Image 1 (cartoon, rainbow, N blue to C red):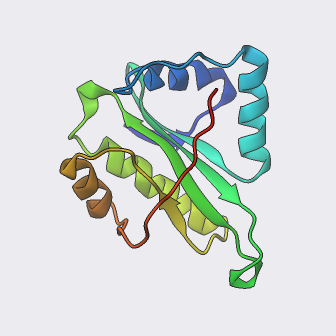
Image 2: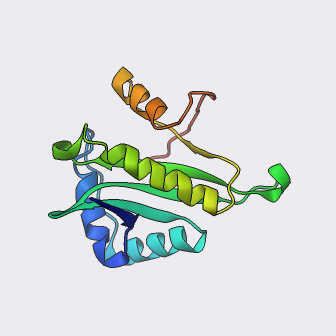
Length: 146
């Protein structure tokens, strides 16, 4: 298993993995939109993390680096879109991806890294806690229609 940053040529594998989410599929962005979003993630200092097995990408998350005026101007990171292929769950892939993401954020000078989950499954909470995350804040959001 190799954990590393995803390259633009591999981004279709990321989109394919998103299709495994247990939710209604959303329309895929156009090729131009994918290129622009990927470039924006990289330009802000973030990355898309991938776990690669012999057969290809089996897990991913995105690390977004956010500029910040507090904490002496140190940025923070938000991890989004954490997913491991169903065939690879329970094998440490998710933890390895999150460890890579945390180390990436720390090397980027972030003072913290956070994530939110929409899952209500206690096993998901245990997974994030065992990966070093604490449920120390309450998350709120407003969603806009696509």
